[in-house]
Image 1 (tube, rainbow, N blue to C red):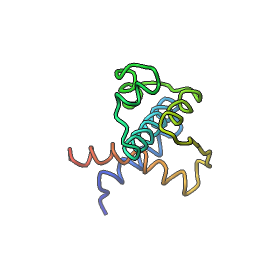
Image 2 (tube, one colour):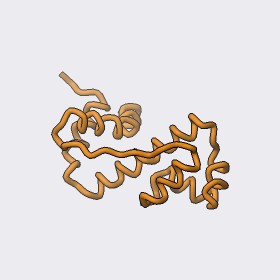
Image 3 (cartoon, rainbow, N blue to C red):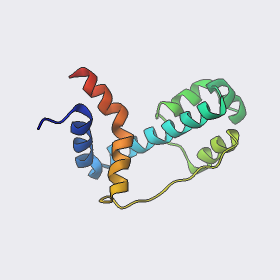
Image 4 (cartoon, rainbow, N blue to C red):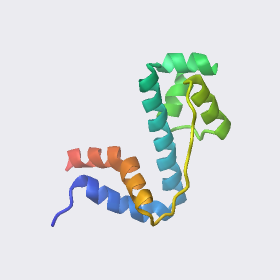
Length: 117
């Protein structure tokens, strides 16, 4: 049975979980996705968030594009600016939760690959 784009990419991504550069990029992208979701939920624009953080809209864009290695303090500042709490979790690499986490994190990339096949 042939795998679709999402399945192929998820399988490939699981093999890359030993690569620290890829894992770090995936985590930055996941944090960015969570921030974007929170902004949408709170009806906060990039300009609004920049103003609340005392930074430039271009810096917020860099954060949302996953191009910033955010500190815990910055994540807390963003959560506070959105009037929300932040959280994170450690899971075993072999658990079903970690596999679904990889699938969720990689889904946008896998979907874009599926469109190109």
